[in-house]
Length: 389
Image 1 (cartoon, rainbow, N blue to C red):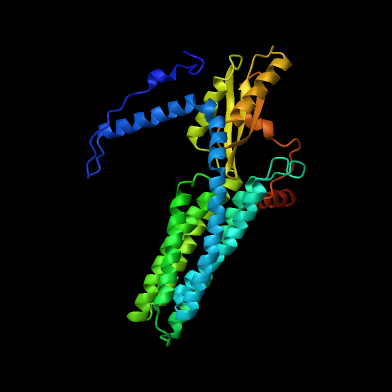
Image 2 (cartoon, one colour; image 1 turned 180 degrees about the horizontal axis):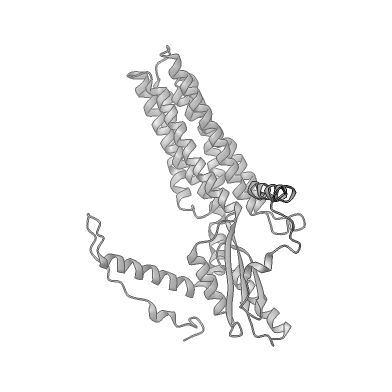
């Protein structure tokens, strides 16, 4: 055992022999066993490298922080240019599918402004007004982004239904210049999609990566349906607009629900909780047990709560120093915003008792069943048991 590996976990790492890949997927026992050992090796490596996560995170932000800002600002500029191009193409052709893509581009522009503002706010904390920082405002920006895109999708579905109900109408034929402009916009979106894909682990870049991915599908499909609807079958244009709207609706609604659970306080993955337990156990020899370990989301970042057990005779100064150093170490893990360490001297107690209200409201239950039972009991008391003859 060494200081870097106090529990001697390296002995449990298994060398995996890479097998030849076949075109047909295999579900043999060997494949399952190799997958298990691969996950175990990754978990052990994550435990052993937990002490370097803060340094690596700082180096990563110093190296890629400017790239994320560039991705956000470039996305805003491209979204503005795309809106102008799509609006020109939609007005000049009268295609409902291109109007759908123009509306999508306009909402992208508005949403980009929202993301720029929230990203700027999250990077500038006000400790006196917001003691724990403003990191969660970025998650709220994502939810606002999703809400705006959902509104656009519903409006497009309504307009498509109106167009289908109105029947075929006369419109100008598609010209080459608007098609070329839309093609240039799609190419610029593809370049930004690749750039944001490489930075997708950052919340702001991840949102724009999803946005550019959806725009590639929306604009490409919209352009095809507008051309086909103009040349061959008229109703393919509003049908294509409706399909685009449904794609936008389901994509951003799922993203909104995913981020909503992060705001509510979704539990962290089990692998991360195990890492927190490992860091706590190996922090100091005076820590006897880990009573409780919780990790949950507070926006994109995580809060960690740890209850440790120390000897009852430990001096206050020692227990304070150990717990404070452990708190600092836990906050050094990747994605951890705050950590709370509670020191106890025994572990044979109900952890739920610690957060119970001081004053519980007594009295009877307010359920319908309890009310009927009380009325029945009261009526039995007032009615005579028998009548004397």
